[in-house]
Length: 355
Ligand SMILES: [Zn+2]
Image 1: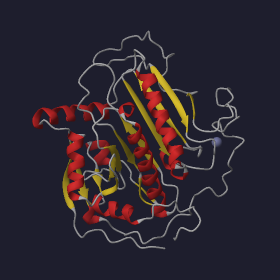
Image 2: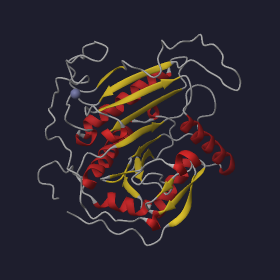
Image 3: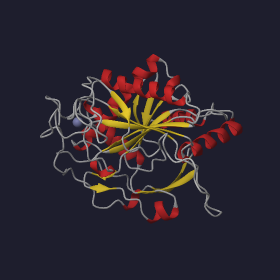
Image 4: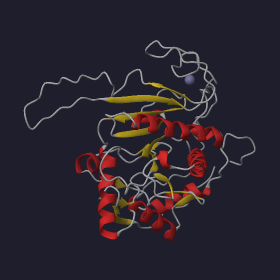
């Protein structure tokens, strides 16, 4: 059992989120009941079979829609059986009274199985296997972006029951939509404004600021960098980005793909090792919109948003976030980065890793 270092005595300020162009209230001074090392029962592979007969994602099993999964041995991609956007969405929609508007929910929703194994998570896969997942994201982005109606390809992973995922089989999703998601629209507009004002890339400036401070950086090599951003809204929020400004994952070269895979491995292992449990998160690829417009200012990155503040405590979105629209953070990004930096980079379920 280890004890986490106490939070700095007083961090009480607002921090500007330059990508969202909004303030984050950091009120770490009122962090009460410091966590002393007790964890909920470690949830790992124990008791979870390598292949589950009732899993709709395991090789050879039937899916919700009745199709049978092939006996895949690596990654496996298929069209979501219950898509939120799809080519078959109704197109002939009666107009509602103003100011209301409707439009068809056209697009493509795909599921990406990360592994044939039911009992592993991304953190437990080899760097090579994670590289295969990055390759799937590249290929799917390229293929889906070529479709006339697609304006954005959003790849993400929801991991853990606390973010609503009941099936532990490691998988992510891809939505290719006929609209640009609000977050990316905001980030693109912020990046364009920053470039007009300074002549520089906004995300490149963020990376530079993180490097200058150094305390929040978790991983860095020649190609990529990962950090808890200065303006983190969630306690253990982490950004992973190529240093070279590229608009999307398709633009990465092979070296950068390999570096991204190493970065993904290291971050997810650090997450799991923090409390020696499978660490829940929402991970999203932030990619530039497709087709038309000036997207050259957009800098591709991957964001992790873990919902837990402690092993037994969720970050709830409440009055400030839902009603007010700005995040209230109870924790110091510097202290949370220090916790993540302090854990080993070998996954805790591997034999020989010290507790
Ligand atoms: Zn499965």
